Image (tube, rainbow, N blue to C red; front, top):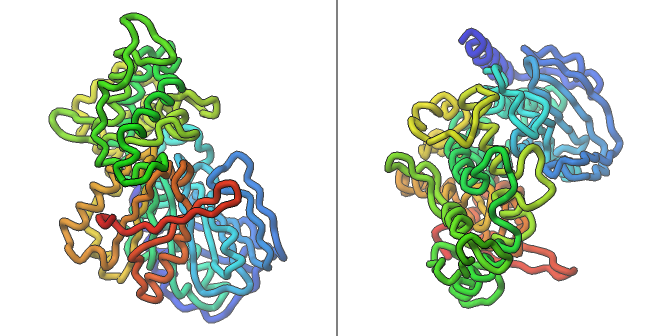
Length: 491
C-alpha cells in the first residue's frame, strides 16, 4: 500500500507543477536539465528530419518526419518510459497515442503528425516486453502503471515539457488509441477527464478479466487438451463457415459484396453446415466437437446466470488476420501460444488475476469469477458509463469498432455505449459510436477501414462540428472505395 500512496502523491506534485506558469523558454538541449518530480530526461536532441523504423511493431509503422523537431526521451518513476516529439513549427496541440496488447515498448502511431505541427507522445506503459504478461508477476507497481497510471503521468509530464519548450501549455490535447489503446482512452475519459479535450477509443479493450474469460472459454473448446495444442477448428472449416454465413446473410443489406452491414440481422442456421460422419473429420464437413466450439464463439460467456462477455458477430471468419490468428490458431504468425485468444487469456489469468505462473487453463471452471477478478478489474477496467465529469470539462469522445473484429467483440462496445445513452439522453452531444462493416481488429478485412479520426475529433472539439457521419475508405488494386458511416444507432 505504501507504493500506491507514493505513486499518487507524485501524481499530485506533477499535477500541481503543470499548473504553474513558466517564465522562460528553453532550447531543446536544455530540456535534459529540467528538474521535474520523479522524472528523468534521458535524451533531448534536435532533429532536422528522421525516418523512424520499428521492425516487428505493427502499432508503430515506419514513418518519415521531414520537418525539424526536438526529440525527448524520458522516464517517469522507475520504469514508465516515454518519447515526446516537439515540432519547431508547432500548432499548439498535443496528440498522444495509445498502445496495443500488453504494450511493453514505446508506441506512438502519430509520429508523422509532427509534420502537421502536433507535439506527439507515446509510452511503454511502465514495462518492457509485450509478448506476454510475465512482467506483471509479483509487481503491483507495474500492474498499476499498465492499468491506470502510465498514460496519465506521461500526459502530465509531456504537457509540462511543452510548457517549458514553447513558453505555453498546449491549447488543446487529444488522445487516440485502438485495442489496448482504446481501453487507455476510456481510462482517461473516466478517471482523468481533464487530461484531454478530445479522445478516440477504437475497438477498446476496457474490461480485461471479462474478455480474458471469453477468450479462455473459446480456447478451452478449441484446445481441450493442454498437452496437445493442435487447433480443433481448421482453415478449411473457416472457409466453409464463412461461405455459408455469406450465403445466408450477405444480401440482408440489399448488396452482395461479401460484407454484412449489420450482423445482428444474421439469424444463422447451423443445420445447413455439413456434418461429418461420426468419428470422421474431413475438409468438407464439421465434426460435432468442431460445431460446438464454433457455436460457443458466437454465444456470450454466461457464468451463474450472468453474462460476463458477449459473443462475436457473424462475418469475416476466414479473412486473413481474423479467426486464424485470434481464435483458432491456424496461422503461423502467433507468438507465445497457438492463438492470440489463448495467449492473452492465459497470461491475464496467470499474472494479472491469480499471480501464479503454474496456473492451468484446462482446470478453470469460472466459479467465483467476480470475487477472483475483483482486484484485477479495479485497476485494469474502464467500465463506468458515467462520463459526466468528462462532459463537464467539455470533452468529446468518439468510439469506433469493426463489426467483424475477431479480437474484441463489437457487441461489448455497443453495450457500453448503450449504457452511456441510458444514463444520459444528451450523450450524443459529447460521445458517439461508429461501427465499421466488414472491418477486423483496428483495420483489415474487406470493409472500408481508413478514417481520419484526428480531423474528426479536432473539428468536433475546436469547431463544434459534430461527426454526423464519417467517410471510411479502402484502397483495393489502386481504386479507392468509400462508405459513409453514421453514428450508432443510425444506419
